[in-house]
Image (cartoon, rainbow, N blue to C red):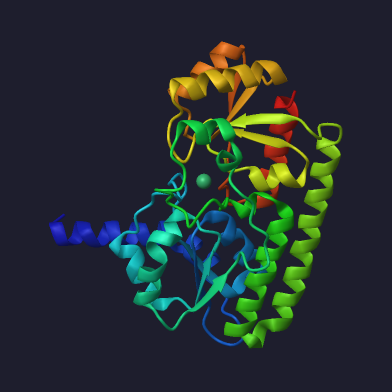
Length: 309
Ligand SMILES: [Zn+2]
């Protein structure tokens, strides 16, 4: 068999192998024509968009799974994908990925509708800023990477997620009014699911109000506020804690009977392990950026329930 023949045989085999898949996965085009292209910053937003838009959308996520939304650098390939976008959903809460990149992303495609998912959400202050001991040790106020002292992780509370979904819904109706009815139906259904998730969390965490938990990266502040918990952060202003900070954390953990240090998936560090060893506790991974938002909240809630003193 010569080379050309071999290539065509291999090609045919590949076609046969993939034919079923290709047909099955063909996109269902919306009645008004082409699928919408929506770009988002983080995975939970992709879930919200897909829940409301259903089959009418292709979603692209700028910060890929496993990447850090505080430091992620957009690739040239990703910038090109913005050319086709009808809409961009920014988190809008001062996430440093967006403070660094948003202007450049919009410059690629000034025609896309930019939706601010945080509109109507009350931002909370980051813990470290109300931490007196921290302020004594550090000069506060000079080099914050966020616009100030606000906590950007709005999506970890399902009550905030409902507002984000509403903002996304309004954007979808604006760029694709022909499918407004479908979007309304899907929004209502998903908000009902978020309400059910919220009720479930309240039930699971009942009796734990006032409990504290330690987490390496303070992504769970809105969740903590919503359910009456106190978040204690290992990381301070995005930096590893000093020896003094570590000792203070260990003392706090012992005082409050905390036995679990939560870390973001793949972000376990020597400092978290050291604290866990000191308090005879364990390090548990929870993911604030999982795409499957509601199922993940249930997992996180179960982990918190087990870990709360
Ligand atoms: Zn974060």
